[in-house]
Length: 201
Image 1: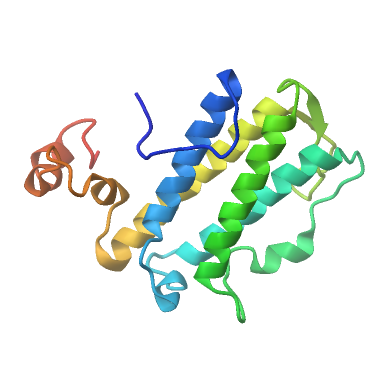
Image 2: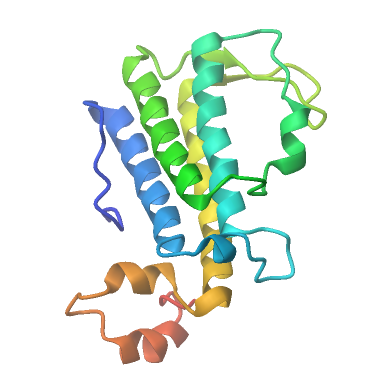
């Protein structure tokens, strides 16, 4: 199966790097679909019983991309997670805007991809920052770090989709299907949605 979006990369990579970064870019694109055409107010709106917002998720994943790139390039065996960042990790605060964090997200993603393009061995082990939930130093391969970022992005894409559906009914799959001959609205919202393994399953 291919990607859900036109997951084009800004770096020239092949093989495993291309496969992993293409899947990651696809998830990045899906996240941005969930945030498309949002007002600043809606980017901050909590639409479920959790405190998560679409703008906050984009801010959090931006930090994730930035942090992963920094860990790989610095290779700091004494690194610790900055807990001061955690207080507002999922909130757009003060003068911050959704547009700012979307632009930062794109910049962070491009920077991460360049870091991966430049590494020679995806199996190289990198020291991970310690944190209250990970007090012992761990070492992860760059391959695993890409996979973890992919997992984290996909995880929060699910959150973003639910938040957006609760906001105005937009589903990510519906949005990326717009204008396609096979994407009959009635089909997606009835039989296929109810079928095992269907879009609504």
